[in-house]
Length: 68
Image (cartoon, rainbow, N blue to C red; front, side):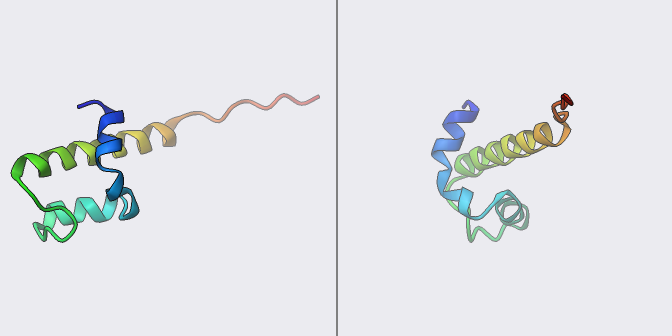
């Protein structure tokens, strides 16, 4: 599943944030993420996608400013 499809499918998870969803998956609490094993694997894909995006933003260089 591509990043756009994951974002659309799991839009409801956005309100919880990546860290809370990841914690729910790791702890096995299944308070935020339940369902089948396949569903949880898709949510893990969403978590990895969000982490990649956050890392890309963090390492993106600042644009150079030109002094006039």
